[in-house]
View (cartoon, helix red, strand yellow):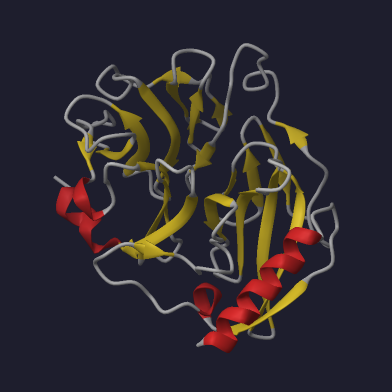
Length: 287
């Protein structure tokens, strides 16, 4: 166990030290799905402690490709206070880590894995790797909007936040092949002190976001709203003690296979890590 942890720390240090665009890949020595980690049960635990979730740096916003062979997340280097977009990729069943680029928005993969959303920007899959950073266009690239995280469903629906306008959540659907102008979600979603970092299910059936409102567990909590048959959104439900604590929980995300729920937790000491838990508890909230 000590030897394994030392390998984790050496690999992590190498990745952080090479924090530059196109940095060399660093082997972790791990194999198997989910970065070779033992799956969690009904209690949330830190994901890949000592490797992806480090003791001093802050790690947020994880996202996987549908084949689970690539993952992306963000890390703030404790020494420089600079944010980076990081990746781990599985090749020949072994995982390799590297730095992608300085963070531009919070990386969230589209359900098909061919688009990496970066707030109001994005990159798309190419034959060799990824394209240059592109704009989503004037409908989203508005200087008066502060989009931190944008999440998409298989139908093309976008859910996005806006820290410049009262921490507002918006939705943009595709109708008859035409992208619709983003509209604020209803008042029972956009209420309280804070609403941000939304995630939408692949099948459009629910959205998850973090907010601060009356009746919570302390700081920001994670909430869920299920879509009704008529297309409207159900009431906001606190995800409860399975994930929420007196600390700050944000950035909820469901794995592509639907087995695990990931989220960020930041303590009062400012330490931020990525956690995961068996996703079965989500179904207890479904109407």
